[in-house]
Image (cartoon, rainbow, N blue to C red; front, top):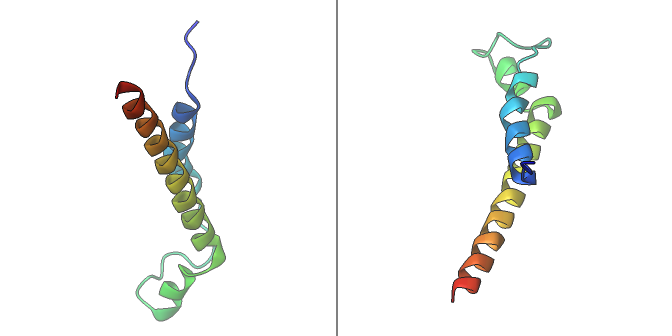
Length: 75
């Protein structure tokens, strides 16, 4: 039986996440006015971006720690 790594599951989830953000809500479509631009600063838009940045930071840290361990084992 082939065991999948947790990293593969996380990457798959991250690749599917943008599909959920494509569901539009009121305020979209008027990106030429100041109100349209301010709409992008609402929590509904900023929180998913912040979550993705946090997940990417954690993944980077985990990958770097794993690489450091492998390099240490080689030495």
